[in-house]
Length: 433
Ligand SMILES: Cc1ncc(COP(=O)(O)O)c(C=O)c1O
Image (cartoon, rainbow, N blue to C red; front, side, top):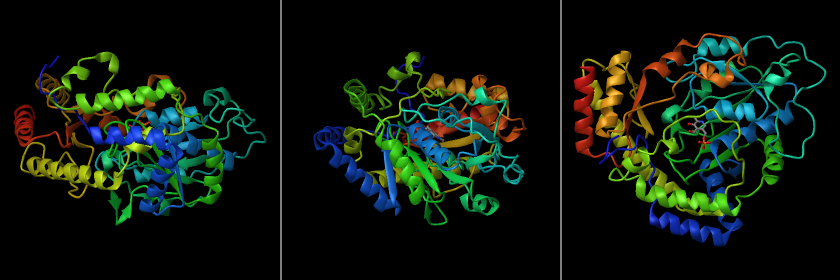
């Protein structure tokens, strides 16, 4: 355990001003939520926006609404290396996970494999849809494994993912996807504020979602945003969202407490305290389909006051650090090819590939000992999550497996000082050199 200055791997600070705005938001109630919603619609130039309790809640609701529109389709095509929340949402929505490998060089889909999956002939339609059946609960679902015998297996949605903030090539995916029944759901959980070819991430697909969780581009402790221009889809989604429960008193107090804790403990001077409490499971990615799906609270909407300016400032800081890492790593002969060079992005964390297992372990161990914030990403590809074994159609995912094996990330947030950068660079050169 490292006691003393410890860098968080990713950080989106929340200050006292934001907490005061959040508390004022509680008193303004629905008006605060309406304000946040209409600001988001205006900023992204979209017709519909929904505010919920997390990114995974947002994704689950999108899938439930899509399932209702296309009951003859039940597969969701996701990258084989992504946050475990993504397959958790697919399972929660009662749908099947279909995987596509990703290219470690772009962190985007392996387009050859994607093309093969999207051009597969659909199997003959079955009469009954196993996921059908009315339910009182907006989010009550079945386990897709229950219906493995009488499956219908056609792609309902494909989920390009802007990992760390690298915008995925959604235009290329659009060209590949000839089937109008396949909806493009942008997973922009990690990429609020980024653009690709001058178009805002979150407006590239048919529908998108952002996460406003801890350490995301912009944070309200926890939260999810859905954006879409599609009226038919928004109508269904609105039905699901309007039936969602609100935060009760205890969950709301919990969010307020977490906001206060983040304000104090995210600082490198104190981050070692939560870091040394394993029960907090900081930085762990969990496959857990049983998460709350709630409407966003007005406290969270209040925390988001003046979000466009704040997001831009946070991005500017991250962009500078990203550029710093690119310059440092480009100058290094030993690992100069193992990262993506994109100088215009405010990445949440800077990914670096370390192919040598021993060196990678040593880098992570030394960083933990010195409190320098280098972290692994997701521990396995999605097909290797123990709870999903045998439930995912076959295929080979070597790109995803190598990402899980090789990637580490360097911090890019505003707490990273020039001294930290020097210390981190020395460590990287010593271990990898
Ligand atoms: C790529 C990706 N998708 C979805 C999510 C889910 O977001 P949330 O944590 O707000 O539920 C995350 C969260 O880390 C993510 O990184």
